[in-house]
Image (cartoon, rainbow, N blue to C red; front, side, top):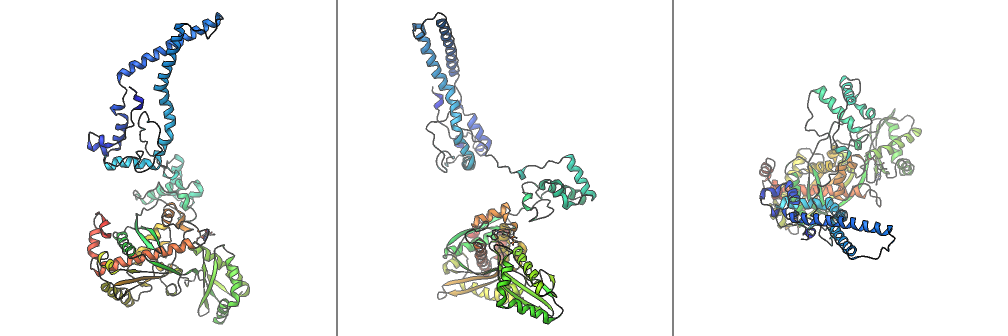
Length: 596
Ligand code: ADP
């Protein structure tokens, strides 16, 4: 009879009469709301009605008696038999009604916190377990298997209906409504009276500015931008830092390679790419490295460079400045001027090159966790202003004279390094080469010599003594908010392979002299990119040891390149490249097999 204490029925699709309905989220509602076992039997209505009637009747009787006694001044505590019976009936009906209706009310208050907990982390599990497992044996969350839900010391009257997980709607996820005023602005942009670039400041709303610009663009070009998403991006976060005149954003899938076993730690490496096979292949390399005991890396050098070009009236005067800058006696004063530009910029060296009466001054400095281009440029500007006093005939032609050298293939970066110079190595066991990489040590060593060393030399390569370092570099750069254009010099890499341990194992290394990465500044602070940095444990500035986050990221880049080189070289050595590309680039098949 005590329907209140019906056991809470798990929302299990196993009870479903229709197996198909197990997979429908709406079926959940059916089982919660419509479970016949939870319905109140009709006879109970009669009992409830009688008790309610009794409650109010005796209440009326008792109140009348109370009034009578007050009027007649008779003592209240002297009770007649009918009074006593009425009091007992009142107490009994009160207890019943409180038990039936009141407890449910209190339960609804008391149960709220746990059911709200379900809507957090556990809710997804709760629904997913029912929906995806088709009522299989995985108990929904709250049943104590997969995640802990606070235990209640009583059963709820009804199973709490699984609430839809509150979708965290950020301001930038909401639809952008266009008003009549916006229509006017669109028209003025189309007519050319309002410059498109001024929309952010004119409207004071980056989302609206983007939507207006996009609409104006579609109208002027007559081309649809459907497919290029507009909503779901925080346009405020890029204002004045990452992108001007936005009209939407491009989506790039992020895959995970790893774990990459590197320097005693494991990393899940995010790779943003649309090239099939790339993540799977890197993953296979990571597997070979991990089974063989992991890779190790060393950061050889860490310094960002900037090289202004200055002109004098004669080569002699240009040479005088060169000697002045390269003299150890002047370094201290120059570095204190340079370093005053930032807490993190520390001048390391100034290397000069002369072309006639033109001088190129290559400043190199450490930049903490920033990639450092802005930082080094500010320091350089300070020094140039200072030099102008002693060399008034110096004509600064450009703060960047390409001897830096940024985003162009250049021997100076290959030889001197730029950003982080990293070497990364691993010894791959012979067994792993055969079973995971499906090739032999001899084949790999020979192919490396013929392709990465001799072949690249024949091609006149500059830093391109590798199989596909830029593939891995670019994918990680895009995922983690680096400047993808710096892939040019960041992908400089020489891959070496050698048989070791009496020919039983393979020593493989990548040497990369100019990995330009940062964990603060630029695109690194954007939500998706910073999530990828977070995954690697290098998000933001490292407060204890500034620069260690960006150096760690550089080693992860090198380690991932090592994995990518191993895997692609193995595929080539085994003659599998075309086969696997045909298989995985041209179908939607499960690529997990490639790493098995
Ligand atoms: P970049 O020099 O790579 O172009 P920014 O110009 O954005 O990047 O410089 C990085 C900014 O971050 C600077 O203003 C710097 O003061 C700040 N910053 C905070 N913490 C650090 C850190 N640990 N390392 C480097 N810069 C940091």
